[in-house]
Image (cartoon, rainbow, N blue to C red; front, side, top):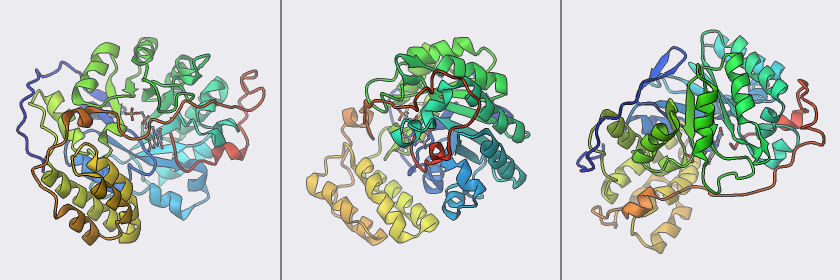
Length: 386
Ligand SMILES: Cc1cc2nc3c(=O)[nH]c(=O)nc-3n(C[C@H](O)[C@H](O)[C@H](O)COP(=O)(O)O)c2cc1C
């Protein structure tokens, strides 16, 4: 779809294959689970540019067990998805184990990722999200319950450095995850306090790699360009990279990553005309999946990202808030110059939320006792976030 004519020559990097249980993920690239973003339409679109592992939006384990219609819709895959990769959120080993069992018994998934990185106060306050790894026994029990019920389906874990710089959890949690049989551990190298602000501390990824010699470690945080991915692997020794915000409005980033790992010249950012074709296809896929009204509502935020860095002016940018139909989208692009190029600095610049820092509150005494008892159900009340 995107013209491959660039000129940034790269030697083929000496990067080994990423193995996650029975899978070889080549190139060693994972689409980060992003609630409200990495739905079927977006995964389908990203995959067209380059291979990798494309993880679903976060799905609530309790919601699955309660047979919530919305929850199961979030958990849906397309027939052409070669590896159905689902991210689960839960804090109770019993609920998590049951949800994993149900997914596996229904042959619904090929890979399960467990989310332990959510910094949202509404769950950490009750012991959920990023607060779970702060209780290693509970954390280990949740991972064990998932692995024990997953059969041959590999289970991976995604977490942060800790609650904040004084309450670091990743090394202990990483060891517990590996002991429980996790097939890989991904580290978003920020604390929950940082949320999405500041810089990811890649040195923590290197520490985790060293601490888990038998388990693939995936590095995550602040990969904005293909060369950032290589730099992370070289600096940390991680087995693969997880990319999130860099592909917001840039699904072709997976093509650039594929080029990099294949040693090909990295394809350039597309001119506006090509971007318009891709964004329109995104809107079409969303419409197919969830209907035109909801699809186009969702497309408004994506269009903000697609237009980032293209010199289209503020009137066009503002007009995305009024998008209601596919025809509106076509009308938005029609008068624009298809040859317009994105400012390269803007393409490589951080995009998406940079929110934070924010104080992290956990229940009283949460850090004093390493209890295995799950927190109360309010800790499970998460339908989005990470
Ligand atoms: C909109 C959005 C939604 C997210 N939702 C989730 C989620 O559901 N589960 C999760 O583990 N992480 C979630 N994250 C975090 C990302 O997976 C990733 O760890 C984070 O963005 C850092 O990677 P990046 O610097 O490449 O963006 C979300 C991030 C964003 C921006």
